[in-house]
Length: 175
Image 1 (cartoon, one colour):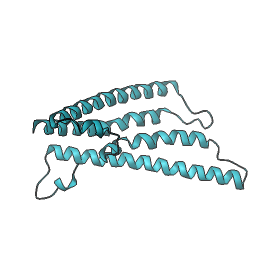
Image 2 (cartoon, one colour; image 1 turned 90 degrees about the vertical axis):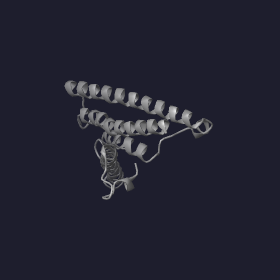
Image 3 (cartoon, helix red, strand yellow; image 1 turned 30 degrees about the horizontal axis):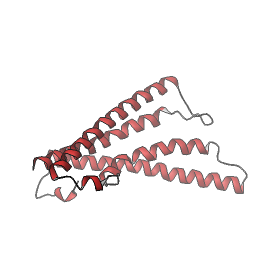
Image 4 (cartoon, rainbow, N blue to C red; image 1 turned 180 degrees about the vertical axis):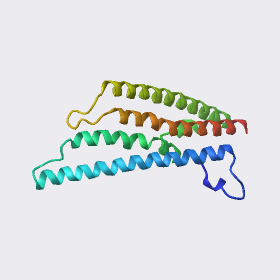
């Protein structure tokens, strides 16, 4: 997703706007994840200092860390794909001809789309189930449904990234 395409001389078309929206959305989800990560660090420091200096650990620090990890990990899904931080097996792909590579990329994008549609939908259904059951953490009583709902919501920018990958792969195969 090249930002140099988005200049005033060449107004962006629909696909370029979709790419820009996907990038912005992915960055915002990443920022929520980074804020959660910073909060985990702060809670750990407070817990360690409270334990060592005041002999009073932060109550529920493991619960806080656990639920915030969900925010941090899920928030970074799409931006890691945008940044190209995902794992690929280049040794196998490099021996294929150009059409074979394009076909494999299309298959991979379709597989990813299917996977994240299923994951997003199932986690959404799970979040509704734990909302109705009132499931909470043991010590602090933190409701768990918002965190499951966050995971489902984080599948949206990931799906957008995979749609972009699919379109780019199809365009590459056609050329």
